[in-house]
Image 1: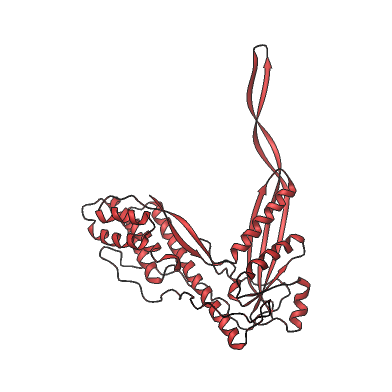
Image 2 (image 1 turned 120 degrees about the horizontal axis):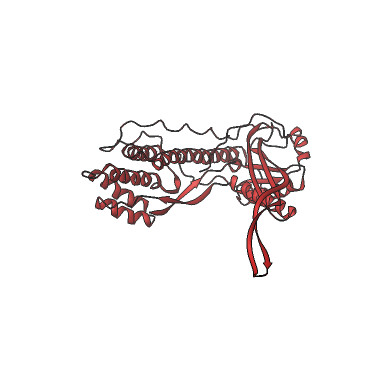
Length: 369
């Protein structure tokens, strides 16, 4: 059975955690095109001061002390490679003779213009130019025209860059077993199919205590559905530690009863989802602390000359750090170690210089779902 669930994905390049972002393009026209799009996109936040700066202005501004400690520099550098893509094509060939004409298909080699691109997004601390993060985004396109292929790759990489700086809500497809016993498990599927994850989970919690007489395969299917429901029942705010452990126990029990590859894949995806929840909480916490620090020291002006507003008051709390919930009867008692916490997001402490210089790459603060 297929249904859907809502998830929230943390930003791959979380520059919105800083009150001020300077956006810089590289040395080519395509770099400037991506930088312009990034600056316009970030400026929609309303709470972040965004400036478009020429790369040549960075070091002089740093030397003059014009870059505040609450500022990061986002440098966009695009590299394009052109070539030819060889492939087999099937073409109709018609031959005519005394008895008429016939059409046959032949395989022929064909060449088409191909363009591959890599967009490097580097985040520097403003006053010191220390590298905080470097991400590489790659796209490719094969078409009939080189210029069209170039424009398509630039557009694809620009879109990827805009997604990388955002916390995004997405809807994912979820596959469940269509169980018929016990009755609560069957009723749970009707709720889950409508997207009612909390109600479906409640029914599956009852079903797990009524598995006597079922085959190990049927029991595994109920435990699997329960594990998935425990994962998505918390909603877009993500998993806390207790929900993660509860979902892990159910999926682990399903894998023990029926060691299908799909059950082990679900366990891996659960760990990735929990890490995303940790990263998301760290990003929101860093944004709140950075904006509060700037407010305490005096808010920087926005592009319009007004005072930048403070952080949102409805920032969701960090995942619950309380211990795991008590194991239900029949569940595995041994719990896995939770994924290690994501690296702490930078706070508004004195930041870095700006001249784009190579350096140690900070760990990626998020993992794609």
